[in-house]
Image (cartoon, rainbow, N blue to C red; front, side):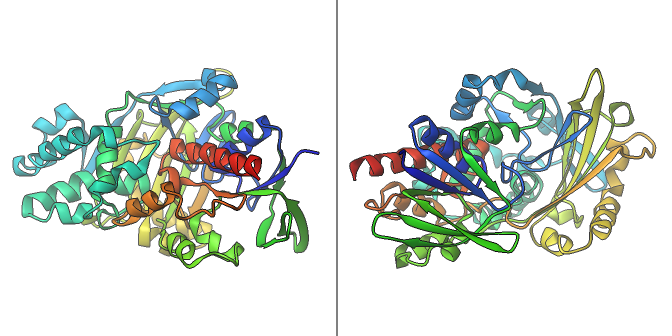
Length: 440
């Protein structure tokens, strides 16, 4: 009989680990708390058009993910995303691009000058800014982004260039982002374009999970070690059930680890409990493409006082020759935490009211959406703040996982806050677990 592996968490990291282990002959069971596979990759469909409620795109730098997609025929679904980026300042939507920044009024010349030393630092540390090995950037983990730009012109560059980008894409603040992470993001900005996927990105973790037994709507409550294996207790619809495992992949959020493992060492507790997450909430409204204005993203600096972090407008191919466009309105951080507790209609009213200053930039007249979706992310993405890269170095050096136990951890808090990071962490966790089981 093949050895039984239980993967706790059916997001991209967990499904990637499951895929590797199934290929290596293990019997794999994925236990997922939600009612779908994918975790923070979640695609809704409107007449065949994908509405991404979590991760929204990928780039050609995602080599491990693209390799998997090519091997499974998913790469043929990719299409290039063509859009513009803008910042909302002083009641105006201002386009952001290298050429536009040189001539527009978004930033003063003194503020623009801060981009040059940032680029120089990025190029100087280029080889250590590895999206497959975040721990290599640990030498640049000494201060937060907010501390770097403390002068008057630096604060302008921070508040109107860096903070909207961090908040709009990751729900982060400059105070919770380290210089190491900023350099990695600057390098990532040189990737050649972004890509979306017909039918939705959620098809990737679903494909990776094929061949595994999948238990949806199951919440793991505890794990107990027996002399020869592990017993996992999960609750489904109020009833407990137990599952035996020869090995475990834990691909939950870091905050969940301490709740299901009762025998963590003090060093392990310190590692997992130090990880914090940003929060997000969004409303996605889908329209026929002719009722919207192009393909764009608008970020809202916090200094402007608007409750929104970003608005995106994205056309998507649907069934037949139909094309739809989805306007997504985002809130993050403390605002998302506050609004996220509201009933759906109140959350929608709040975000729609905040959208009014730029409504004419994304919609033509006052169309009615053909579909509306709401998503709340209590734990959206992990902070890569000052100190976290040092913790990643500890993890890489083998100081967090017990090298004698068949338990491996995976997730974006280890691999990085991109789809590639989560996927790669799952691949590596599967390889470590396989090696330990074969060496027993």
